Image (cartoon, rainbow, N blue to C red; front, side):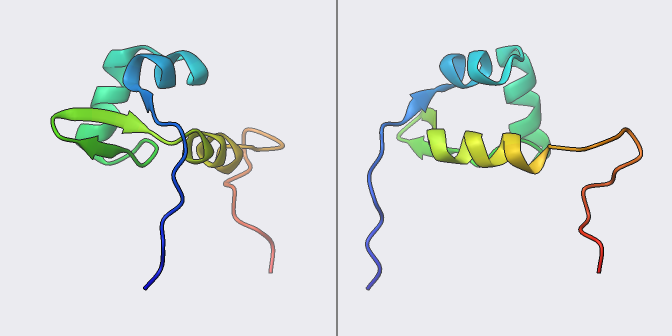
Length: 72
């Protein structure tokens, strides 16, 4: 059985601040399945810092025409 590693979870306000967006944007992304993966702890929404870092890295582009796909 795989064991999950525990890391400090942050709330949506801290996650929004880290990404430079509004909390409303985070909520819209969750509703539409577009933003970073999140964790529900009871009724609370939390984010793993490593997931936010990966979300930022996935958005890196070299130009506006770069679709993010690696060349084959």
